[in-house]
Length: 120
Image (cartoon, rainbow, N blue to C red; front, side):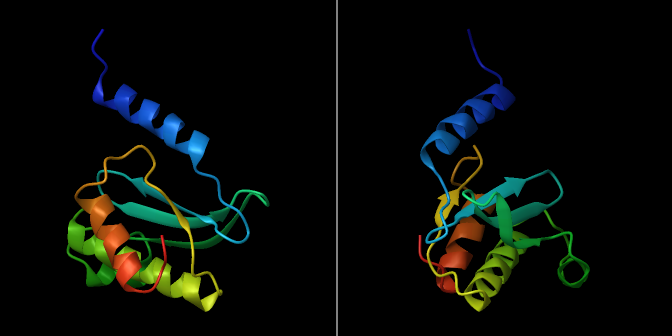
């Protein structure tokens, strides 16, 4: 039985979430990628709360980008999430790619976050 792309992504997502847990010392950097935008959140799973968030939907970031669905936009979100995390005193995170392959926009966001100072 051949799986569809959606089913494959859902299986990867469940497998990753079974292993990756965010804690107060090392919260989870979760990434969601839609066709038009990309979203990133730093989440403490023990408190079930979002500590920091950034996305291409935000008005100041959206106005400076030509599109929210390219690697350039993802890199901007990566820098922004890292800056906001560092302001809150969060330096170490675990990366949750949300079932997406570590390629393209997901990779651009992760590398930009690392360059801006997040450790994962």
